[in-house]
Amino acid sequence: MDWTFWLEWVIKGLVLCLILLVGFAYLTWYERRALARMQVRVGPNRAGFQGLLQPIADAVKLIFKEELTPSHVYKVVFILAPILTVVPSLVLAAVIPFGTSFMFFGRSITLHVANLNVGVLYLMSIASIAVYGIVLAGWSSNNKYAMLGAVRASAQMISYELSLGLCFAIAVVMGDSMNLVDIVNAQSGMWFAVIQPVGAFIFLIVTLAEVNRAPFDMPEAEQELTAGYHSEYSGMKFALFFMAEYQKMIVISMIAATLFFGGYREIWFLKDTFLSVDRAWFLGPVYLLLKVIVLLFGMIWIRATWPRIRYDRLMAFGWKVLLPLSFVTAFITAAGYLLAQELHNQLYLYGIPVLSIFSALVAVAFIYRDLRRKSNGRV
Image 1 (cartoon, rainbow, N blue to C red):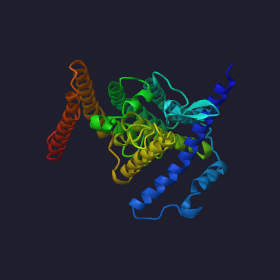
Image 2: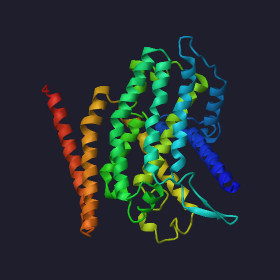
Image 3: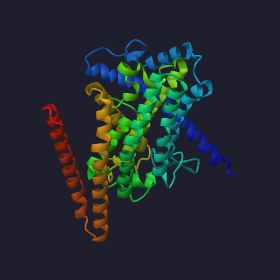
Image 4: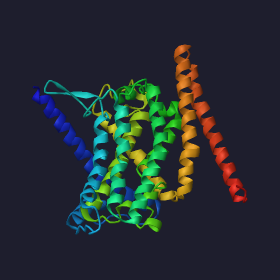
């Protein structure tokens, strides 16, 4: 048995968990500071320089905070639900490539935990079970408000997961593989977000709904459901839900960067320079980190500027707008790549962004017309 292989696998898994845990802690600091700057107020600045020790202070507070377990809950499921919520957010990152490889004492170390041939299918399957923890948390709380939040979460995830699956299919078609490393390498000449900007934009919108971020945070609409599915939780059990949300933000940003923004690779016009990942392996994690930071800033910016969507409009937007547009975008992408391969003419690839943007503009026009009709009192 090759013990060095298993030791390498364990070490990489532990390092990945440590990265996500530290990332979760400092994403809360990043969000609070960014929101404070946008809203012209003071963010955390007391614990440590510029508030950098604030996440540690929050962790200590939550560890020592009293945990209350109401007598009317289903205790076993009530305790397991936060764990079932946080585990998928860690497991998802196992197939995401952080870079190429490097030599360490004569052994080639790859910068990913697992390189699956069906990595995209793995991501879709694990992302689908993340809602179970939320549903079980609401059901086990034996509280009507918590249960309504859990039902909202499941309905919202089912509605937007269809569009998410089509966005994954678009990346698979463009990369001609379900292996995430192959998809990243296929973007060395051009990012998929440039070839299919509408598909990338839909993916970013859908992921906001998947992680229940504003303006899609209906499962925790405090003005209607107190705090939603985690109303009965406190202390570290509540912290696990909090941790799951922010870790999923990080992982979703990694997935978006991998599928549409080149992953760990440099911008395509730098591939023949000294800033290429092929010449300096350590630049791969740096490029991925920068892309994740930018995508996370986009999520924070949306939270600061967009109001929460009413629930019926949220569901209508998913079923009546995003899903048809995702189908059209997937069809355009598949047709463009098929024609380019069969007719040996790359000009068909240039038609993909043009037709996709045209379809998106048509969808926006229909939405605008519908809103105008409703504002004029005609249904």
